[in-house]
Image 1 (cartoon, rainbow, N blue to C red):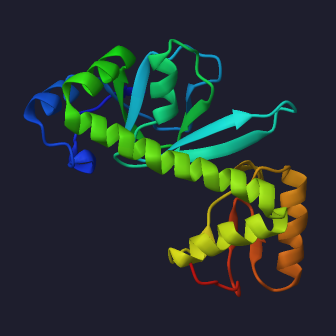
Image 2: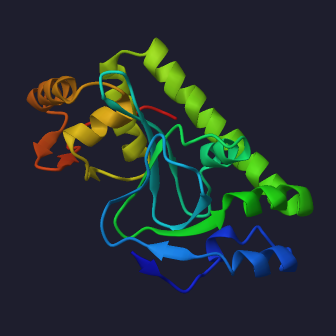
Image 3: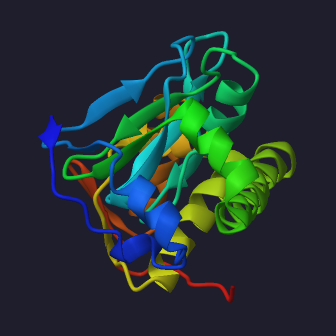
Length: 215
């Protein structure tokens, strides 16, 4: 993990010169490997903003199973860490950076001060809160009203809708996204493979004849 020169191209909606000048003073880290930035229970010292790559925001249930809440993509921040920092709580989630991810680390108190001093920053954060709350509602709806098989199908169809016929993901990672056990994912994917809808390889799923619904 090391400092990197910063490019703010992916958060270009922020145009306030004073805000941008302060942003450029914040440390930026790059990650060559998958890295845990923050675990549940850790102090919240900073607000991470993704310059490029992806952060996975997860929680563990009582059995230790990991559940993916949402992802933080280019130009986005993890708003849960912002709210925890605002009330001096430890982190309620874990943040993991994919290999190749570059993250700006904004000190928590500074990010809170900006809410008072920069209307543009306030709109940026509130818009992210709206988006990520929507993601959480979809996770709750999916786990409450859809079967595991339906959740897998929707996840694969979402990839197809983006033109992805080959998905690089392990059964354990897919289980975390869906919110179930790896053994359940493996069994259902094997059934789909027997039906000729996909082909399973180590660490990837090839969608050979998978039905695509309208989104």
